[in-house]
Structures are given as C-alpha cells and as structure tokens.
Image (cartoon, helix red, strand yellow):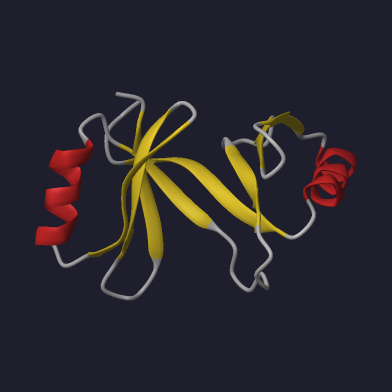
Length: 113
C-alpha cells in the first residue's frame, strides 16, 4: 500500500442485510462480516465497507486513505488546516483517525502499523 492514497470507502446503512443483498444481486459484490454492525465488501473495484447507523443517511460515504505513520500524517493534515473530528482509535485490523478538510468534508486515514 502506498502512503496518502485512497485505499477504502466506507458507507453508512440502516439495514446491513438489505444493503448486502442489493449490492450482491446488482453487482456481484462479496461481503465479510465483522460483527453485527459492520460488513466489508470486495469485488467492487475498490475495497470498502458498510457501517450500521441509526442516524438518517444523507451522505454516507467516508473516503479512507492509508498511511503507515498515523502520528506523522495527522500532524501534516492539522498543519495544512484540517480539524481532527475523531482522534486516533483502534479497530479490528488497525488504527485510524477522522478529519474535516477546510471545505468541511470528513475523511479518514488508517494504518495497519
């Protein structure tokens, strides 16, 4: 994986089983469940996942970049004008943080290190 490249797209859903059935039937995507609130998809051209939410989904896409050194890249995005909206946290497979760019778009950066 290359640093600072889009690596993953995360989407929100109010019904994981329904969204899985749709994307499997319509596009042939396959899924790997990580508990009752998250499923990852593959065979889509870009890896991604669906996160269960009770909130209304308006724009549920989260673009996720990769970087091997989260502390280094977090400092860079803050210096460039980003706001950290979710500090570094662990999840199965790695760690990540979320930030808002100067236009207000929320993105995330993850690492398996």
